[in-house]
Length: 255
Image (cartoon, rainbow, N blue to C red; front, side):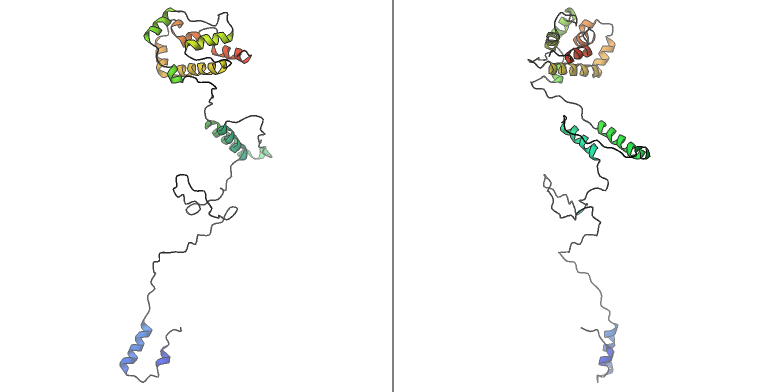
């Protein structure tokens, strides 16, 4: 449809009032209105992609909530990729696996000319060591909890410990028998062929006692008392058979 042309209506034989109406047609300027619609076309902005185009095939979240991945945020690989050697170390630490598997060893060509990569590697490994979980041991048999072993003994037991001399490392018995004596005094079971696990519980208990602030204050106040009144100090710290000596003998075999 063509636009209005006033010359096409100049030959009309009409009065002056009607001709004035035709002039109003040329003066009219229509207003542009935006109509709000329910359905709108989704045309994403142009963003350079890394790799393949996002096909919007996503694994949903386990809690059922929408994550809007690919809509509100890009679902593409990061521009700065992870170091494969560091990532391998992280996986080994989390899975707690080691052994004869081949481990990738990274190398930096012309390392003397690229000190930033060396500093970056040192920083990554330092962060990996700081985030590393404390080592744990899985016992093959049931062992008591450290909190239960640290519970206060009855007053009768405390009085008996002040009167009875505890065994020292000078006993004429082998290391396995001595381990059973010490562990039985502390209610730590020693299973057949599992002496190392019992020793691990024993030394873990010793570390907890040494790091306990309440016991540190008591030990400072009772420095003049005899070592026989403290089972942990007299048996494992004050005697000739200290923890390092006992672990050294176990390393040579026997349990």
